[in-house]
Length: 247
Image 1 (cartoon, rainbow, N blue to C red):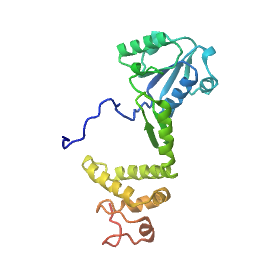
Image 2: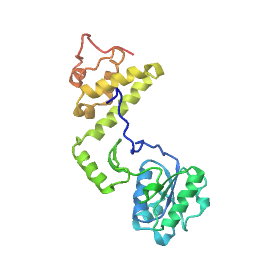
Image 3: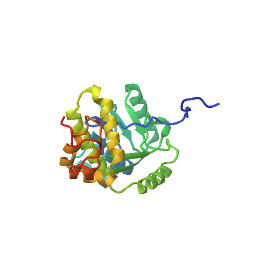
Image 4: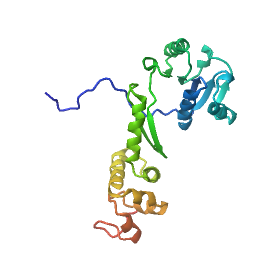
């Protein structure tokens, strides 16, 4: 018999957006897999160090090093490389060495991902679609990376082409709203009002919203109303009042 609350479905992963900005990430290896991992963490603004003999670097990793996008240690991994590290990603063709690195990370309580060895991964890399601030990850929990890629492409193909730009404009409006209503007690109202904006305005409206439009729209935050973009620009806001309320 089903209960009143969501049923538990074990066997999944906790899907999180891990903020690694300015955190130290160690990448062990310099091949194709390492190159992909490096792009992922650089896109998240992490500070990356690659440990690999120069002879083992592929062209992309060598380019990242030459451009000083990452630091490079020209040798094989040593335990001291873990000092001060927040995350470890290994991508080397040496299962024994990879397992040893994982054990060292486990002892130091450093989150690690050992490429192609799901049991020795504290987290997985999913297949990610990126459009500006929008990120959508599909994970098969290590069961089928290729299938995750297929599902991700299908999801991405169904999204509006301007969704990323719309999200950027909404983010700017949200930041402006926080400045005029910063108190924690305003939190629920801010969320409700922003939800109304997103629900009542089309993606085209959100993309075309100028900063002047935002300033005018914010005038309706206090009464909790959201006029259409057309009405806002005509100076004839929807609702039973004649104009914006001053904040």
